[in-house]
Amino acid sequence: MVTSLREAEEETGLVIAEGDLSLVHVVDLLDPGSPIPRVQFFFAASRWEGEPVVREPDRCTEWRWWPLTALPEPIVAYTRAALESMSRGALYTAMGWS
Image 1 (cartoon, rainbow, N blue to C red):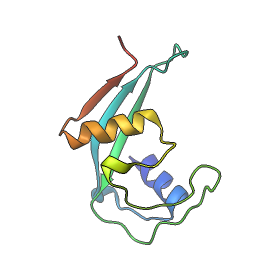
Image 2: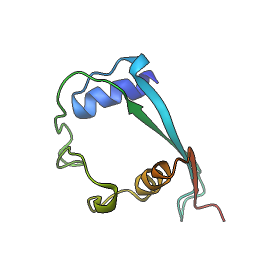
Image 3: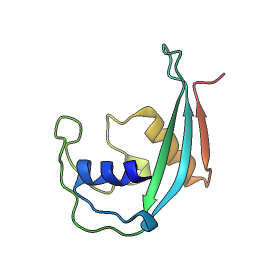
């Protein structure tokens, strides 16, 4: 979890205390064309300090709230799948496993 807190600060400028972060979703992913499975963890912060800042402009153009029915493009496929699953109350999504 410490890595998630550090990454949040490095990528957004937000400072989050460990007690304010909760695991909310897991994606078990096998990308087409890759034999290496991956697991993606999604966390939610209940509180944070600061305002989000774009610190990686080559990867992110802006921080803002988007309606689930109008997510921006392009968006990483497993991120879209996780958000859609979370909206249905699911804690886990498997992708790429047939």
